[in-house]
Length: 420
Image 1 (spheres, rainbow, N blue to C red):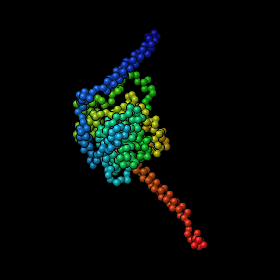
Image 2 (image 1 turned 90 degrees about the vertical axis):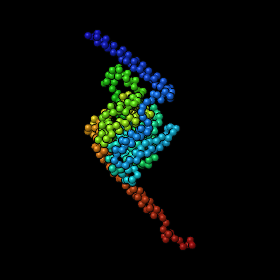
Image 3 (image 1 turned 120 degrees about the vertical axis):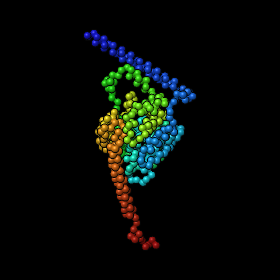
């Protein structure tokens, strides 16, 4: 028995070494394939790319989705300039109540990975009841331009942040309530760190990229070799590559593998094909947004540079509200950790019962009510700050007038007749 145990112990390192060797060979094969792929001629790519999609079809599918919004919605492309490239880029934007004078803060919506402005369908009507609402497609996604991003994670963040700041300036917003879901929450946090003066309140709906990757993951989960092989083979590919590889069957693939996401919109969207079609066309285009996301991620979806380790860099006076779904795969403990890290700041953590990762669509009424409450609080704080600034300004003016008055010359008392 003892000899068998020793033999097993002696054999285990050899087995692990074999697995490591096989996985390394698989990784080498994939890398060679990806290098050869770059040399495929354009005429052959015309045969390979067989996705039934186009910019026009994406526009049509979005119009169908947005037609179920009851309030008047205005859409436009906002030119954000060349940024880090050689050509101009545009960010598709929809806005409600934007042209009406309002003393309420605008709320700006940042979608998650593989999404677009259309999936805010269940929120826009409610949120625009009393304030301006803006939503835009981030660069690389949906109808916005799809520039090539850096492969360095911090640079990718900077590129997203730069585009949003240029967008804000072109649209003409001074301060806003910024709401980001999933990947949008990660980018919104990065933006708030860079431009805290523009943020009246930061709302993070089930944000991706906050937790740190567990150091001991490999000890807790002993993965079979075939899983390691598959993970290695798929590592260079974008997360939604299957949609494009599926070609004509891509639209059905969305409905088949994510019926839960499509069903969330059934109470409002009568056309059952509208949401699957929109999601498909959003992700069947040139996948530069996916490539940017890949640059931000380590293995199995962990962020290379988690926000929880950087959240202390956000200026103390920027308030944060986390909104999690109780059934979501996102770790909400980082929301409570943020509260502990930012003891001198406003941090609130809300958990919506019965909701998953798409908390805005799972329980839209409760989600909208929470967001409206946050916005109303932000309005009060903002108006109070304006009043304090105005009061301080008036006091300074009065002090200045009093000083000028005391420094002025009294003609009668200083008049000398001998000077005449």
